[in-house]
Image 1: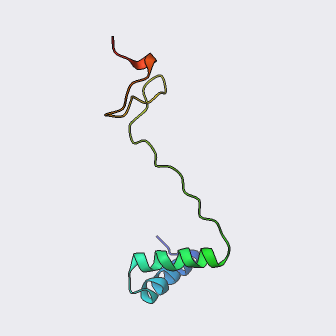
Image 2: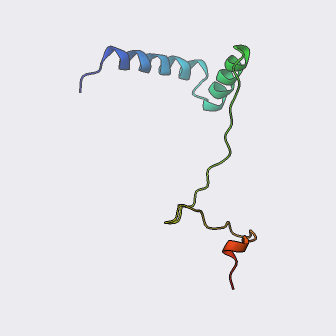
Length: 75
């Protein structure tokens, strides 16, 4: 496979960032977050996704330890 100029540029930036932060991904992450804050960007955080697969009807089964709703109550 031939390496394109774009890929070469991306790899060069990646190598430069890795060298600047000593290969420490946490340090790089903190620096990028600070750069975003300095630029006035807002960090958006979404709630964690439910890892359980949906049921056939599209609903999720109740989480373990939760109280079932009336429609899910076991007779």
